[in-house]
Amino acid sequence: MTLPVGEDEPGRRLGGPRFLHRLPIVLRLVIAVAAVMSLVLGGAAALVYWRVESALDQQLDADLATYHHSLVRNLRAGHSPSGPDGSAYQVLDTRGNVIEASALVRKEHLLTAGEITAAADGTTIHRDIGGLLPLDPHTLRLKANRVRLPDHRTVIAVAALRRGHRDEALRELLAQLALADGLTLLAASYVGYRTARAALDPVERYRHRAATLADAAPRVRLPVPGDRNDELTRLGHTLNQMLDRLESAAARERRFLADASHELRTPLSLLRAELDVALHRPRTADELTETLRSVDTEVQRLIDLSNALLDIEDLGSTQHLTRAPVDLADLVGTAVSPHLRAAEGENRSITVDVTPATVNVDARWLRPALGNLISNALRHGHGSIHVTAVARDGRLHLTVTDEGPGFPPDFLPRAFDRFTRAEASRTTKGSGLGLAFVAAVATSHGGTAHAENTECGAAVILDISC
Image (cartoon, rainbow, N blue to C red):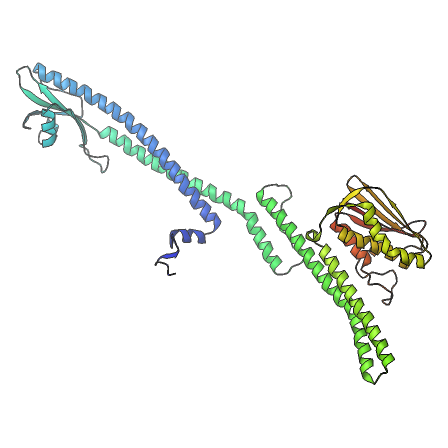
């Protein structure tokens, strides 16, 4: 569709609005303040002017009525008309001829032909001669009506008073109002500018700091004052929290890539070595079968490692958590049952102590986490394994203990780090992600995971909300 010339959208013309939109916010605020103040000051000035003008007009009309009454009385008494300074009169016949007039208006006609006809018919005429501007020393306000004299003649008596003092007072008032309004508008605009500037200075500081952030500077945060709690301060805190989350997400992504590349290197190298050896010279069927079994083991290790890494990353966001009421005894029972046969094969036992309760958790994640702890106890511990589950005051406490030698002291501070093993050798069975997965499940449920050594062996405790 072709837009009309001068328009960029239907109903929106180029020019004023778009020009204002290009201006900085401070200038737009100042223009808005100036426009509103202009309307307010203009309205106030108009009100003051109207009130003063009305008062002056009432006084002038009262003086004119008194003078006109005196003029009519003198005409009926046959006396020579007289009046105060700045007064003038004319006496006209019904055809508009001047019978008598004061020196000030002797050579001019104060009434038009239409007004003479209307006055002769009995209408009282009120009119101003001359305006407020430009300056005119002969401005008048007149009153005229028909008068019947004792000799039965009908004349038109016109009384007039100068408006000089009234007009001068109004002109002075206009000048004073214009000066006062102008100064007030300048002051309001300046105050509006300083106020807007002070209000938006934090935004400008945020922008400068954000530009630094765009340059990939580490740990950059917006400069938020700690002694305020206004809208911009809360915005700054919100943006800093967003930066924390973004930085945490970026760190998790970097850690994921680093961990994946580091841990995938070993099984991939083994796969490549097995295949190179198999292709180096002809092999028997048994040798090829053994090679394929070794390759299958490494492929399964890669699959398990990838799944574990993806599960931990999924748990990094609470969006992947779906809580639902579940019976605590059933939850623990389904986590323990797959390991009972392995425990019997090693002449070990798994005992369970569960407080009857219904908990609100995501069993899809909590069940394998508890299974990981039992599997670790079977693999690295000795003796009986004891599982305890207690729900109290909205918290669920899960504890798995064994009777083995416990954790090495230097391993405890980093027990839940990714790819951390108690044994230094990378040939140890497992990926080093089991406890990291348990910690991720606990964190996603709003809780913590803790490992310690007891008098009997190792213990891992989960404390999560339910």
